[in-house]
Amino acid sequence: MKPLRYLCPLFFAVLSAPTLAADADAGLLAVKALGSVNGRALACAETKLAARAKELMLAHAPKTQRFGSAYEEATQEAFLAQTRAAGTCPDATGLTHKLNQLALQLADTLPVAAK
Image (cartoon, rainbow, N blue to C red; front, side, top):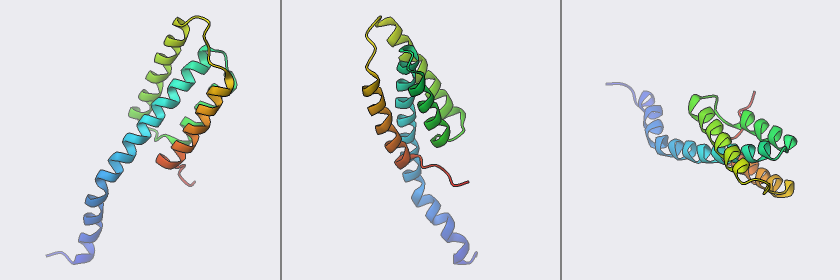
């Protein structure tokens, strides 16, 4: 039989697994929302806002295919939707506000890893 000290890390890992999955799902939703803002910003030639969205993505999202694909797909969908809506770009203030909200949400769900 293994000593208790070897079982404790496994026990805590099992208990925290649902929490980690919920955090990843919340983080994935935030990344999708970030991609959506990025797509609208790109379609509306708001390059500074698009650059900020990309910076937030790179700073917070795990470097995995799942998160990268979610961001890219949301960006493409929002870009196409915005270009099809011909001439109805949201104002930069509204997009900035949304980015600020997402920055706070990302800080909670996907904090920047210490280097």
